[in-house]
Length: 321
Ligand SMILES: Nc1nc2c(ncn2[C@@H]2O[C@H](COP(=O)(O)OP(=O)(O)O)[C@@H](O)[C@H]2O)c(=O)[nH]1
Ligand SMILES: [Mg+2]
Image (cartoon, rainbow, N blue to C red; front, side, top):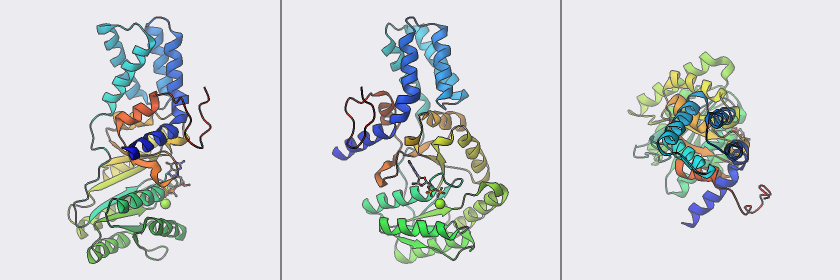
C-alpha cells in the first residue's frame, strides 16, 4: 500500500537518530568483536543501557542472546544482530497495538501526561486522522489551568475539522469532560478525546484532579473512559518510567503514547516501557507533522531501526554513506 510505504519511509526518517545512535553502536560492537564471547555480551549490554532500553529489558535481551548462542552459535556478526532483533520483537510482542475501539456511544479517551510531553498535539493529530477515517470526534479542553491550553486545542480542532468543548480558564476540568460527553450524544459524535493538564509540581492535586475527571466520565458514560492513555516524551529517557508509575497508580493506564522519538538517539525507551512497566506502546510520534503520529507496530519499528537507508528521504540530509 502506497500510504503504508510513505509511513515506513517517514518512520525510518523519524528514527534516524536512534538508528545512528544506539543501533549503530550495537552494530559497531558486534563488528569489532571477531568472536562471540562474554566481552561482546558485556558491550552489547552497555550499549543497550545507554540507549535507554532499561536494566530489565537489557538483561532479558542479553540473556536471550546468550541462550541462542549456546544452542545455535553464530558465524557472522549479522547473525548476532538478527538474533538480537528477534529477542527485541519478543519483548515488544503482545498488547493491543494502535487500534482504538470506538464502538461506544460515545467512546471516551482520556489523555494524561506531564507538561510539554505532547498531549495536546497528539490529540490534534489523532483527531484529524479519525476524521479522515470517517469518525466524528469531539475534543474536550479539560486542561483549564492555562487559557493558552484551550486555545491550542481549539486550533487543532479547527485543523482536524471537529468540534471542541471548552469552559473558561480555571473551570472544573471534570465538568468540561462531562459536557463534552453530553455534546457528543446530542450531536452524534462517536469519540470524545479529553485533554488534561500536566503540571507535576502539584503532583497530588494533579492526580486527584485526574481521578475526579475519570470518575465523572464513568458516571456520565458507564464503561468509559475505555482508554486511559499516558503520553510520554521519549527524550526524557528513564524519567518517563517514573512518570508512568505515578500516573498508573493514580488512574490505571491502558497504554502509552511515546512522542518525540525523532528527537532522541536512544529510542530504546520503547523496550523499557514494555518490559519494565508491562504497558503496551500504542502510538508513537516521530515528528511534528500530522501524519507523524502512528499506531505502534513492533515489526515496522524494528525494521526502521535496523534497516540502513541507502537513499535519503525528500528533504532529509541525514545518513550520507
Ligand atoms: N519533534 C516532535 N515534537 C513533538 C512531537 N509531539 C509533540 N511535539 C512537540 O512538543 C511540544 C509540546 O507539545 P504539547 O502538545 O503542547 O504538549 P502538552 O503540554 O503535553 O500538551 C510542541 O512543540 C509539539 O509540537 C513529536 O512526536 N516529535
Ligand atoms: Mg497541552
